[in-house]
Figure (tube, rainbow, N blue to C red):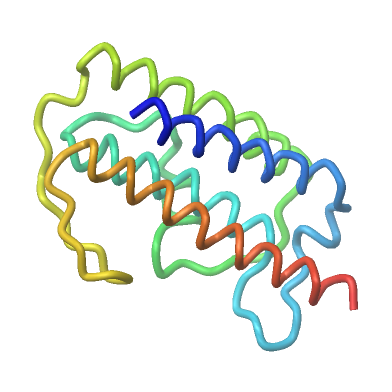
Length: 154
């Protein structure tokens, strides 16, 4: 799993740089033809990783219920996020994946409730499969963010 965690760390660092290089206005903008924004996509990857790894393992996440509800699957931005919320998301990009990695190697994920992913139809049956899917999912949302960046700048 070292490689999977390396990919996740790299993707999270890319998301951090995107936050740093863009204004709050651009992070919040929903361009025509889109139903979400850059910061929603970044918050969504945080929530998805926590739900797929921790909740499906019967463990508590380190995210608030409010954050989970704001960024979970099938949610949409409910308005503009504040700079404080952006700063929290940015900090969580590193802390959540570091905690997941630590917990993974400490064998915290003992059980797993199988879950079929709607986007691909794959059924996740253990933490290894979940984390591999998380890496794919984050790459997918990186693609969305790149498309949003292009639309925001036009």
